[in-house]
Length: 196
Image (cartoon, rainbow, N blue to C red; front, side):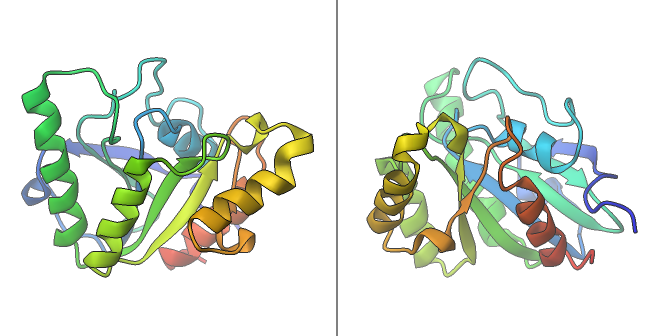
């Protein structure tokens, strides 16, 4: 059997949900501007340059759609928080993201990425509160877990989970750099998209 997500390819970028066609199923990635969304997407899909990574946070400014399998999408949304760009442009990103998240009937899961070392920020809490308020299914993915010192790993996982009112097992702990947790998350996403 072929590896799920290996055939993923970039399809389009859009500035509005109205510009998007229909999909059978899709999942979306949201998170702060420098949380490593592009790196995670590349690791999940076995490709180094699928999603453009940058040393400058906030480079994803559009709704980026990737096709994996027949009519299944992975969607990379603009990061929230610090991003370079005109203030007026940054204000439109929030409306774009909210419009996408509330406007897609085929959206199966919103993966909320947060930095495992930093823990949930005020902006992460705001995103989670908003997702709950509009009753959207979501899952926490703690990225860059390799950057937490080995001696702090267990305590940090407990602290992050406790702050979110979750168990450590409720959070996907991943490292795009080291590959930690990537195979399990890949299978989970493939299952969400009915690819298995």
